[in-house]
Length: 191
Image (cartoon, rainbow, N blue to C red):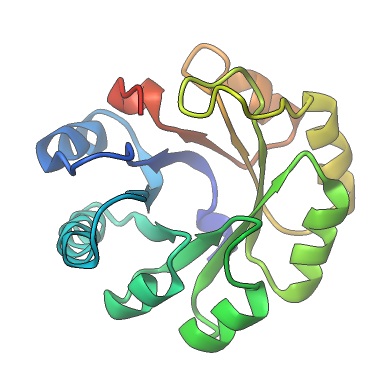
């Protein structure tokens, strides 16, 4: 599965699902991974939207990851979950989702956090914000040379996130990112 953590890692805008818009992105670009992110929706809406996205991902042979919510990932049989610093631990997520699940961890600009996540069994780590981001304008910047250093110390894929678009993605890949996460560049979102 780790070899599928590469290329474009699309993250849905934090708003009501626009399935046609997401389908167009799939048809226009090669999306390796899609992460569902809708933090302020109620549980029924999340289940409905996640199921629709899961079907879309199955049609496009794309990994489907749920942001933050291990229970939702389990309910809809997503491929995995992405965890931030205030979410479940890797061990808890692994126990709940099983050995086949993909578990990613946000490591911000902290290599030690990434090494710890790898040791705990994470399948990939994410570093960012690599560039100024409209989605999270106050996110601290993660220098690209930190990615170079992380690549030397980690055996799992690295995802770059934050302000990445089609003009600067090569800088992230050149630094050692296996995949680049995009929201605004794909969906013209300002969430």
